[in-house]
Image (cartoon, rainbow, N blue to C red; front, side, top):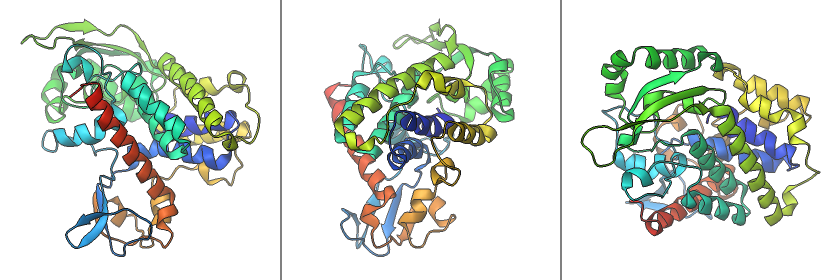
Length: 369
């Protein structure tokens, strides 16, 4: 999934279900920020109060702050990074099957994932819930792929209905992979490791796409054994995902009823699922969803939630914010604001660390690694 689904669709669904604006924003922003939290570590220039810090020699800071690795090529691929960052938040293992090859493939039916979602709901924490919704959404979109180098990510016979994709970059990449498979195999495919859905480009993350492919289903044989995926309808996948989101958010309201301010609206009548799955280019995603949110009177024109800014929480958490400084992977002299412990950025960090600790325990219990 991408911005339109992880952020705007989650934001709209929360409001359609009657959740308060600020709670809806925290859930939706946390859902999208999983893709945008790229800072790996920061060290404080001034240690903030009420914050549990890691110690780096004589310095204090926060470690493991990233929830998504940057685009990885053969020269930059690190299996440890994929296992610690990409797998937990974007490719939760199915945890089913007799071999590691099958257990590591992601699936929305994963019992491990269900436990993570249940714990997020019971936490009553909107940040934690947003993180779990991201993982579940990606499990639907990335179904069958894994976040590490795996034979199951080897693909051939990739086909896409080009009429279901909008946007020059996405259309170009899909057409390039589909029509020049031999050229692709000796160009981009050689510098992109066989991890995640790199062999099918951005198609799994496009809610409108209709596509298919063949994948290597063998886990022990030296020779590849290809099996057809069958026709894949992303609109069906995404609608099913958000119907599950609806149930999850309703359970969240049961745990924390104070988050709801008004009665739920008729989701089907609102045109939500049509908006979710319509072909829209990435350049027009934000404006398209803004129009929907305003027409449904879910937000007012001046509301900050209408305009997603991946640095919004960083800006309000650090007194010395600059885009250049806080776009780096390592921040050596971060200056937190006085009330840093209560900022959205730090609360998101706490939630993602709690989620990751739960993931690590469940990985052991389900004997995945």
